[in-house]
Image (cartoon, helix red, strand yellow):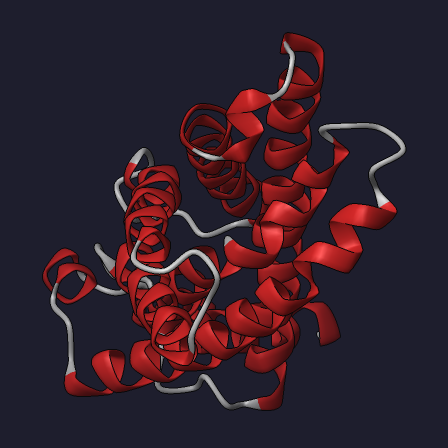
Length: 212
C-alpha cells in the first residue's frame, strides 16, 4: 500500500517535463500576484534602503523581495521553465504597474529567473526539498548581485560596500526567495489547495506518514 502510494506521487519523466493548462494558469496567477508585490516592494525601496544606510551595501538584504517569484512558482508547479516563467511574469506585471526602473525591470526579471531556474535544473527537476530551494534562492541572489553591482547605482560604490551588497543580496535570496518560498509552498500544500500538483500530493503523503 505504501509503495503504490509513494510511486503514484512521483510524476513520470514525461509528465515532469510536460506543462498542463492548469500549470500555466496557476503559474500565471502566482506571477501576477508576485508582480503586484514586486511593485509594492519597489515603492518601499527608498525608505527601507534609507533605514539601512548606516552600512552602505546592506540594502542588498532587500533584494529578496524581487526574487521569490521564480523559486515559489517552481516549488509549486515543478516543471522545467517554471522558475523563469514566474519571475518574468512578475517582472512584466511590476513594469506595467509602473516602476521607477522601467524596462530594466524586465531584464532583471529574466536574469533572476535564469538564476532561480538553474537551482532546480542542477538536480534535473527531480528534487524540490528545502535545501534545493535554498540553492535556487542563492543562485537568483547571485544573479541580481552581479547585475546590481555592475549595472545599477550600486556599481558606483567603493569595493567594500559593493562586496557587502553582493553578499547581502545572496543571503536575501537564500532567506526570502529560498526559505520563505518553501514555507509558503508547504503551507499551501497543507490546505489541500495544491492537490492537483505533485507538490501538494507529496505533502499529503508526508503528512500522513508523520501522523501514522
